[in-house]
Length: 360
Ligand SMILES: Nc1ncnc2c1ncn2[C@@H]1O[C@H](COP(=O)(O)OP(=O)(O)OP(=O)(O)O)[C@@H](O)[C@H]1O
Ligand SMILES: [Mg+2]
Image 1 (cartoon, rainbow, N blue to C red):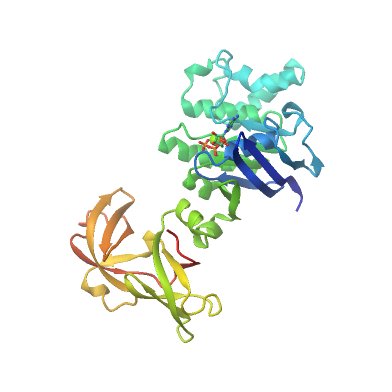
Image 2: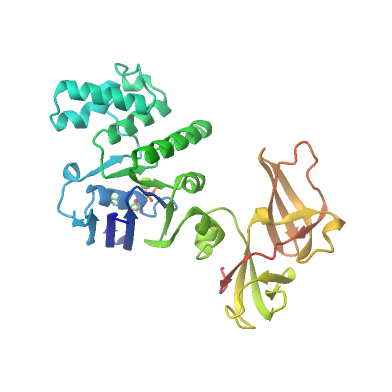
């Protein structure tokens, strides 16, 4: 597959603070790639480097195999939708979308046709003469997208384009974006700190923290096999239990791991850890079952007490005290059934994450 965008050894510091400490990335033609990471980790800076708005201290941006470092933003085959939208408030919808086309001196007729086409694409027909400030937030986002699409860029750069929208609108914009991106075959890079957004639209996610890519992979890879404690905790929720490997049982294919909750059995490869190794066991809240005495006969059961049960609609989120540990347990919507209360039993899964070392 062709690499449309390649980053090699990108570094950037602002003053004494290193923001990007060596970023290497390859993005393939038509791929939807997402940079995800906490606020301030350098996502926008990296996107701006790709768009040519920020110069890296070292490293190279290749577009279609060519070194693009010296190419200014307007001459790069990229289009950026900025974190704050950055539409021209004094121009109409049509004029906003037409802006780049006019800069390229397309004839009026072509511009008009193209604007009509783009408005249909983002389902905003009939709004061409409307002032920007008379559109809803979601409609403005769509104008910004149409403007970015207008020049048919090789790479579309989206900086948190949906952060200002309400939850429902965000969901529908997300679906719309994915549909458009597929239909147009656009190579797209999205920046977000919203894990749901990243998981639902991306072919590949790059998790950034402390200036480096912590992990890259498909949403399933990232969620099911996080490379380290940071990724495990940043993408989804994770309970961490410090433990010590006691033995590997070849019959069950499980390690016996001593933890503060007692011994746990966790599936794994026999050569991964030696007896005595300090590890951290990671268990997703939704992988833990909660119930009464009936769970007691199962493997990996732990007695606990419900500290808090939060009904969120789609699920109930419990905090359960088990010994000195507090475990998050998520249970899919039980309808009108009463949440568990008081003394409970938890059944931890055999499939859990085992990381070398202890996370503090
Ligand atoms: N022009 C600048 N001058 C000095 N520091 C900057 C500049 N731009 C960004 N920074 C700093 O670099 C770091 C990374 O900023 P950046 O905007 O890339 O983060 P981000 O990951 O996009 O965060 P957010 O999710 O909040 O948008 C921050 O600590 C920020 O304060
Ligand atoms: Mg940002």
